[in-house]
Amino acid sequence: MITMYQNREMNPNAQSLSEVHASITVPKTRSFWRKMAAFTGPGLMVAVGYMDPGNWATDIAGGARFGYTLLSVILISNLFAMILQHLSLKLGIATGMDLAQACRAYFSRPVAFGLWILAEIAIAACDLAEVLGSAIALNLLFGIPLAVGVVITTVDVLLILYFQSKGFRIIESIVGGLIAVILMCFLYEVIVSQPAWGAVAQGLIPQTQIVLDGSMLYVAVGILGATVMPHNLYLHSSIVQTRNYERNDAGKREAIWFATIDSTASLAIAFFINASILILAAATFHYSGNRQVADITDAHQLLGPLLGDRWASVLFAVALLAAGQNATITGTLAGQIVMEGFLNLQMKPWLRQLITRLIAIVPALFVSINYGEHGSSELLVLSQVVLSVQLSFAVVPLILFTSKKDWMGRFVNARWLTVLSWGIALIIIALNLFMLSQV
Image (cartoon, rainbow, N blue to C red; front, side, top):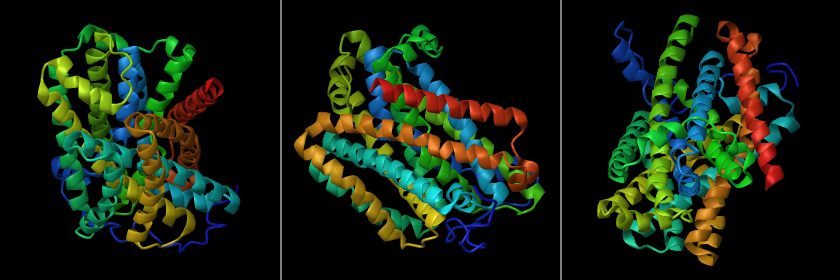
């Protein structure tokens, strides 16, 4: 390891997502709500990663097989996420660098290059889940073959480029609108499924069998990987800098405060949606004897007949399509941030997004053509386990950087936060090692 900027070959004035850096005005007013409105948006963009199609596959499998038991994993993962996203936004605001830029500044070139490769693998796994999720949703809603649906997802690249050219607030508004669609769909689903709320409350309490049962642990680690996503840590540290707050201590302190509220509230919404998917699967499948349901397609086909409500299946697919489209937007932005930050490589956005999508399309096409719906769902779960394994390589540098007084100044982590953060990192690492030994 080397000290800050010794091996930093990037332009010291280079800014993350320079085309939208400090582009959103923060009003100079005492009004809490007006300032809160100005800072609202990045949290919703980050929350997308916590409700993407990969989450659906792991949550459905967990709810159908184990009832409400893994609700505690979703809760704990979400609490971990709130803390780690706070560190991420604080790094971006306090240092003016995103996590990728910070890694390039701090680590030697071989180490930084290795971390870039791992970050790209994580983004590819995430994009794979988005491609498969969107293709499955198109199949469920319109009967479009999976392979054709996978190809159609390339159009997302053109849509993202169009909206990105209209301003960052437009993208945030689209993301917020799609989250509202997902939220309303699952409010309906939970009401119709009539879960046993006492059992739901009990499921929020962690149980030792989660760690002792290898199959349960595999799904639990998949939920962790689908909840706390490594690319979100890179994304958040960059997009918080789109706000034009004053770049002094007072302005940064205020920005960290409002950005943390935005992030925490948005992740609370994500927790409700994630928990709703598992509750729906448990109430509908586990307790009706359909514990073999482990993929999105089977869930969609059985929801209507088991609940006696045809809208349950339709809204399920609508929410899935909204989740896939949302995740596409944030995933491609994260890819741009990672490449620019680690390599100081200014690639044209359309080319970067096309490369990311093509990397995901190849395995998705292969699996959809050769193995069909069930193979696609298994690949979804596997992608989330891959994300979980990659998570440690983003979390450890993040905690390291935000604990450095010479980097963070007065915004350095408090001792209790440092201890808590390292505890979270150790839990993530230990779970992954145990899961790999079981698999």
